[in-house]
Amino acid sequence: MIQFENVSKQYPDGTLALRQVNLNINKGELFVMIGPSGCGKTTMLKMINRLIERSDGTVRINERPIDEYNIHELRWNIGYVLQQIALFPHMTIAENIAVVPELRKWKSEQIKERVHTLLDMVGLKGTTYSDRKPAELSGGQQQRIGVLRALAADPEIVLMDEPFSALDPISREKLQDDILDIQRQMKKTIVFVTHDIQEAMKLGDRICIMKEGQVLQVGTPEELIQQPANEFVRDFVGSSAPNKSLQPESVGGESMHEIQAASGEKERLSSKFDLESIMSPLSPGHVPKSAKTAVPVSITLPDFVEIMSSHDHLLVERDRQIIGEVSRADLIRYWSEQLQERGEGHE
Image 1 (cartoon, helix red, strand yellow):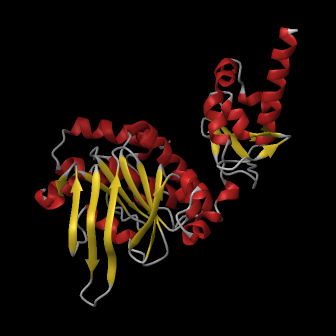
Image 2 (spheres, rainbow, N blue to C red; image 1 turned 180 degrees about the vertical axis):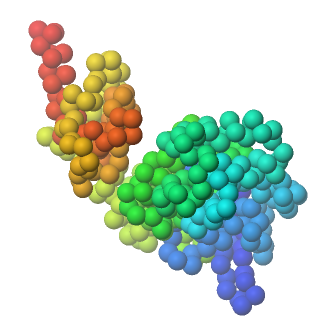
């Protein structure tokens, strides 16, 4: 989908930002670039939509050099999300999202339908939020609109340059979850720059670790932790390992890996899974500090097990209201009870 072939960038002052970079980004993957400040990750990102021109080498999209594209058409087909949200303050939310579709001369009904679909996708009802102005939204909601604006014209590629780094931890985690949900539904090619290794590990299908303008290693989160290319990579990703499900974590003597391996059991038990029956109810307005990520009460067991594999606690919501909290121990307990019932039935 996107190829860098021997790409270098040297600025007029002599600074060498990129050194003979070779890299392939696959169609439909969420590709994360990370590294110390000044390593060249943002320079690479901006080369894709030609905001920065390379000094040497070739960048291709769909096997075609980007220089052969009309620059306006190139950028219209690449969504771009910045840390600075830059919504137009005098325009409504719907008008902000619709900027590129209008430039591409979409029909008004098509634009309206697209805006409402995207807003609903991130839990902001189109009928409620379309006519509001950016100042009426929280920082997290404004950044959500920035993401939707980048997706509005259905681009093949979306570039995200540290889009959540200015947000508070709760808003940041919610937006990370939104990106994962959007990616599951839309399967865009997303190139995401961050300085946060936890964010990279959570979001990336593959992660590119950079240093001093060079690519040190590209791999899945598992590959980076289990097979680091060198000491720098090992140290850089090492702090993320305890918070991931990439290493066995046991609760009550059973690991989440063992639970995930029992895929047949998950499918068999899904029909009787009731999250509300195993969660701890919360009084209205009370949100515990031990959990930040929320799942719907109607979630299926396989999806719940997958999400719980990287969390110790989750919040449970109904109609976007928090109604309870559930822990990994609760899941283990439920699983054990179900397996015990099955064993008794076989005696």
